[in-house]
Image (tube, rainbow, N blue to C red):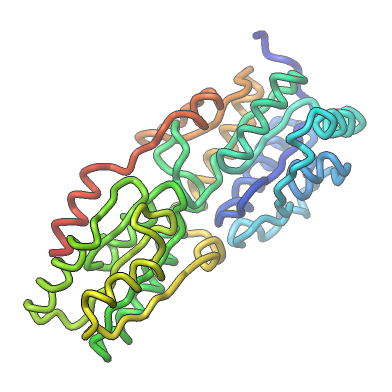
Length: 328
């Protein structure tokens, strides 16, 4: 398709928030200004697009947002956008503002919506991967993943202090309903006794044997990392099973939950978000539509959204091997 003349770009954040989204918005807007484009903020994601919560952005709107967590454009999940009627309302509102291109920052659900909307109405769009789960194909890293890992590891370090003081066994649940990337990295980075992820099932019997072995080695504390979507169950369920087989353990459970989504983005996430924001605007200018801007081997790549949301991204087997070796 021949590149269209783009004058006004709308930017939105959708789905779950991730540290670094503000940095991505800032980079997108500043890049738009650099190329003499008008930039519009669409508040509360697709829901705001349907409700006409659309405002022209100026430089003042992106002052001091780089270092802030969350998203100043707000985010929301929209059931109405899943309907043809909802998407028609959204298109009409974009037309009212003369918006002729979109940058969508979010995870697989957000990019799925962008792909569908492009197919129906042909508005040039580029996705930016913003999700702490790091589960999108077409990029080595997603915005927010590094910060979430740092947050998890910092929390686990604090838990270890009390675990060591009382010779306790802690089960720490991290986010990752369908992907174990946070769990694996947190497990390696915090010297966990074991790491349970959705991609691989660890029989309870094997975990029991590992914990017995660590007891025999006089380990002062044991911390088991559990991804919330693990095949063996959540942290509470696994802790109950272990307690029945190892009743002498003083067992505690900590669920980190949405703590992992908040906080100032790490340096890596700020730089990643900034690069992808610029890449999104330049991609639109170059006629790259219905794609996701990602980074592979430290190089910007554009992957068709259909591939990014469908392609399965596996946890690195070598990372899993390293985690296993270091937990013994």
